[in-house]
Image 1 (cartoon, rainbow, N blue to C red):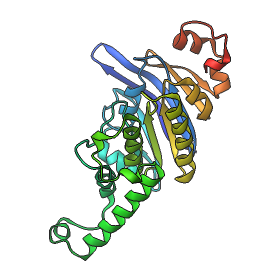
Image 2 (image 1 turned 180 degrees about the vertical axis):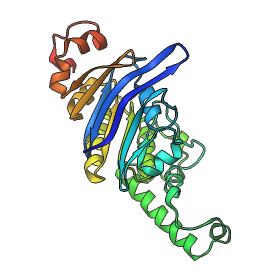
Image 3 (image 1 turned 135 degrees about the horizontal axis):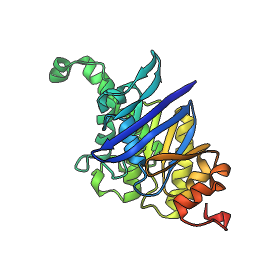
Length: 264
């Protein structure tokens, strides 16, 4: 059974249709890629899934512990509570806070104390805050940021800011993680490290991951299935080997026939 089902999803902005009639199924513990040229609707698709935009038409269904639920019309924080987290193409950290505090903030969506207990710093508050700090530090260790927990987030190198954003998303304890161009701006060594990291967290946390990425070598290496968007429409879907030999994909994404397989 699909964890995330997108049915005839369409989003128009005035006379511009950014996503048109998209049908996507994502299954448990899959790592699925979304590729396509700039402006093809990839980030708009993520914004629809996470409640930033309301669809013009169509439905998004998410399988939770309580059964299937429609996401249409829900606020981003409600969708996060249901188990879908994301990172952003443009990094959106709390750059004036410490690395540790960025993760701790995300943990607070599930705190077990109320406002009064937090004001008086009661026993339950102290217990929960100790748990949150310990779990946050463990996430930072996993992302290679434990040694920088007290540094200001905005002072981190670009690649480490990307890692911190993933740590913050994981802190919400999602079952589905959406990564929007996580390798953007990274050099080849950093991209290789990211590839290993994404595969590691997928297995460690039993995650389903939906990935937008322009780095084709990364996509072809780690994704099990791929959907291709062009002008808001899904023009192809399949395994990496099927996608890289699809003439429609080559024409839309690269503009010419691919002759050297290493380019992927």
